[in-house]
Length: 475
Image (tube, rainbow, N blue to C red; front, side):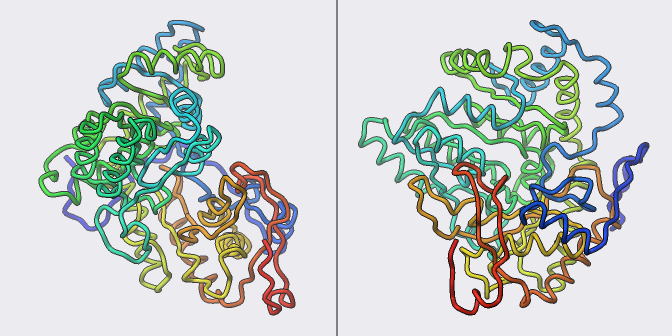
């Protein structure tokens, strides 16, 4: 039996294999960043000391998952591994149709390409980057309806990821006036990544279900961090403390009609995802596109051993010792930064901390990309790679206009079961060192970028002091 009376929450695992990491000098990091055109996505991973770019597919698998790989059935059709995967997903979600994909964005593409049309509106608490892009490529609108507290980094609310039910009702009423042609489906992202990894309450999800029933709309979850969301519900929502994370997760899924899922997050796997739903017609359309773009419906672009790893990961991720450690690891870093008055989204999210670059760097205008300035400085200072979630990621509108994003953030996403407490202590030291000289940081201009998902490959140049003093805010 686990004794939870002590204050220290230890890692619920032993380390059986290690990978060496490369140490670099400041001069080497400056040269590497210049070669990457000042975009940390373009760095060679071996030149990064602590990689907090994303928690997607970057975690460490368990011994049980590695053992499951040996059980993989690589049959093209009807693989035994698919049926094991399907059984686990159905037990967790209750959805009738389980369609494997190579990752979450493939599930998004299949769902949106088959079910939405130009001019429609897909509401969500907050769409993340690939979700938004896959809606906008269909010439539809991805509309964010997160509650007011979710748009204010310093606001304190136990469920800042909640969707604004009043705003959703107004949109669905507008849809009713257009004979139901405006809104094809309603989505909620758990946890809310764009808004700081913030959870959504069961009460809020029940409210969405009620509205979708009233207006006869399908309700889908973007469920890639469902287990972390379930843990927050257990810890924060009245009447949920005695329930298991799995039972809470099962209720969340059963409130919905389907989900998209990146198994690279709370599937504890390095690749994979799925689209799941109850509607037979929607599932048939999805499978037809899957065959065209991903593969046969019983492998969906994945090897049999990937399906085995995901199945085991979905079982492990709802275990209480794992979730207790996971959420506390993120809060531990947040506590250190908050103690030093580093502005960030509060309370801490599940998978990451989000530094408020707009508050930390008020002298850098939004369209000189303060998030890029901060992310690049963290890399040069200590070899830490984070990611901008601000006007580079979300500032370009479908009509080509550029406008500041609602928030200018830098996310430090913690991979699952990878880094130790001393790694996190080091991250905190580097962040505090950069914050201490934040007034010296300079903005950037974008020199090259694609129109879609530009943050992955954009190129930047630092703005020199002379231009900055002249007031040039060119993009």
